[in-house]
Image (spheres, rainbow, N blue to C red):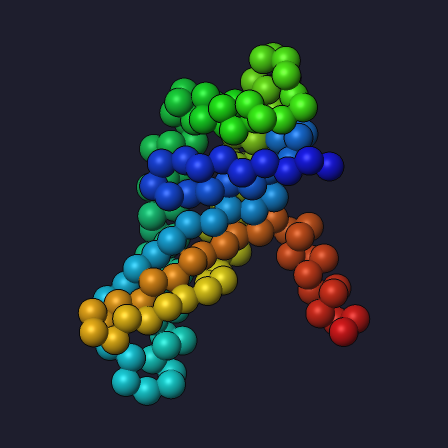
Length: 146
């Protein structure tokens, strides 16, 4: 099944499929910290996740119900095989509904995918991802079978 990525305000990238099902969300978080011992990095990542959750909560409140959100999703489908405007609208509305219904799960599943620490600036820059429960379950099954 074809997957798409929509870049939305606040540097939030939403991956979804042609049925409008949420697949993955990516965002960024920067926190000012001093990492002077090994556990400090883990603590900084926890802080980055917390900041990311706060930012996403605001994002959900301000962007998901905004009429421009539907337009952004439809625009991300312009290069797809979905040529019918009405089908694009249905996919965008389905994605919007999925995001609203799964908001708590999305926020709770946020994790640090990668991070980079700038020692001079004492700044940790983290890329945060949130997966849907099906993808998380599949990844756990893959880990168990290794």
